[in-house]
Amino acid sequence: MSFLSLRDVKTHFPVKKGILIQKVADVVKAVDSITLDIEQGEILGLVGESGCGKSTLSRTIMQLIPSTGGEIILEGQDLTKLKGDAVRKRRLDFQMIFQDPYASLNPRMTIFSTLAEALIQRHPDLRKDKDALTQKVSELMERVGLNPGFMKKYPHEFSGGQRQRIAIARALAPEPKLVIADEPVSALDVSIQSQILNLLLKLRDELNLTMIFITHDLSVVRYIADNIAVMYKGQLVEYGESERVFNTPEHAYTKKLLDAIPHLEEVNA
Ligand SMILES: Nc1ncnc2c1ncn2[C@@H]1O[C@H](COP(=O)(O)OP(=O)(O)OP(=O)(O)O)[C@@H](O)[C@H]1O
Ligand SMILES: [Mg+2]
Image 1 (tube, helix red, strand yellow):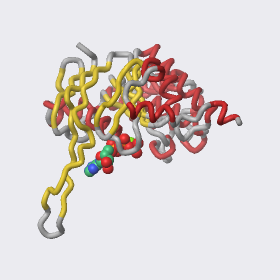
Image 2: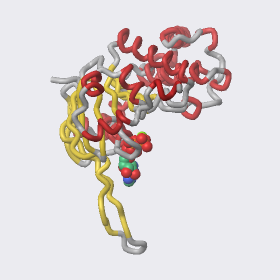
Image 3: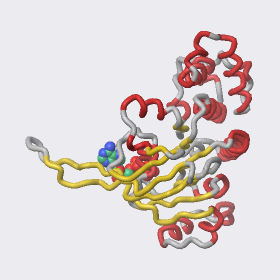
Image 4: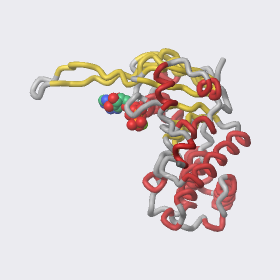
């Protein structure tokens, strides 16, 4: 059995029409019958054009929006059957990293407070033990390549790449089972992008971290992902080992995506 199994997962949004009397006129099939397995320690690249359903699929896996159908099985447990408190508890198992760390970090909180808050979510007892908390914050900062001496600083005192490291540390703090990174390097300079990608690869090796990596950038996904899933209009049109998808794409849409990558010689011309 796989670490995470998606079985025929559907997320449909009703579209209502009419002002006085609202009727469900249509449905947007944002995610439509996705079946996919993810193993522990795997990095899955999720690609596809804007609006194809990547974020909706992520939010459905995290139980932030209800699925319309199918099963989402994490370590043998179907998450779609959980209710109330059990759902809230499970959400800690899923953490996200976003494109813009400046928007996702609270500008009025020091790095210490941001990371402490995230650590306490999983271990409420740490609230009473400032020394242990400080120790854990130091360890987290070191793990993502930040100097713990900066824990009393605020987000604006860091560079973009360092802020993304803070966001990664915060995502790791609750000891998640799955990290979903939605365009985590798209806003960074190319030289910084590779540093962050290498950090994520290092964390995967050290922590056996499982990750879904969403991106428009196929060169990024080729570098970081073990397997690639290509979505088109809510459906999975291609799935396979990264190099296989790049070298011998099977679906016409994947070929189109690959043809759209600028070739190096053209960029340098
Ligand atoms: N709450 C909602 N209600 C209705 N339709 C929605 C809702 N959320 C998303 N959609 C629709 O579902 C489809 C998939 O959207 P989604 O945001 O998942 O795409 P995406 O692949 O993440 O795109 P992007 O690359 O731009 O982030 C789109 O047609 C979108 O308009
Ligand atoms: Mg999205």
